[in-house]
Length: 283
Image 1 (cartoon, rainbow, N blue to C red):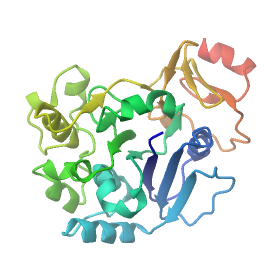
Image 2: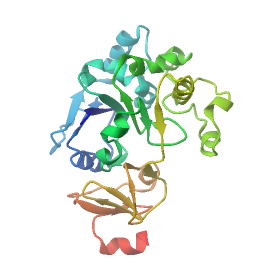
Image 3: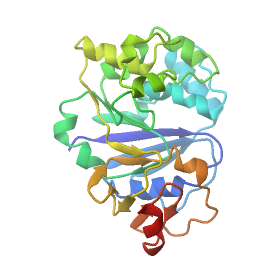
Image 4: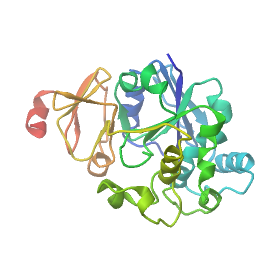
């Protein structure tokens, strides 16, 4: 089985949904997870495959600057998104010895990762995105080799992106979401900065890498989702690699989650731990 390590960087107070992410990590014991955070809070009951590394935002900026060879600008937590494709390069010590590394967000609930990222898939592709239209910032996987770890440097704008404090959406598509979700190609539009989606697509077209783009996550106002012992099931028949809480976290902010069971339900507006109360919300 090819080894995988996933990295997330976080700045500030931990969000309410973090326990759901942590809980889902425990159902993926063959994958290692690392959260690099400036939050000094000690988290309890972490699964053995999840490690928290305390690192101040200023230290992350210094590490990035030293690795990249120019002054990186990480003045706020959201800017870390622009550095995601470079995590394998910047945090090379953390990924040493792994076959694959990836970046992830914390607003995700993981399903059965190995169901989708089996050795046949990992033996075929150098880069995997869980979306079909752009490189998904919430979860992407990279083969751990020098060519792929340096891939972000193929963008003519990467130094500009990483030295400006403004968020540039480099890890995805430089904000060209509507264009791409309508089925168009990033290569047919002129964006302000050359994003990582464009880098990957050009490298794939040149035959330099093998990239896999597929719609294997769930997100949006879907409802009818069940987390069942480490699996994300939609409408009782479709399985997803993860559920992205991108929309749910905007409308749901519980103050007391309690003990997270091995099975729970996700509606368009909240997460239910009991089956009876979910029937109307989900159906």
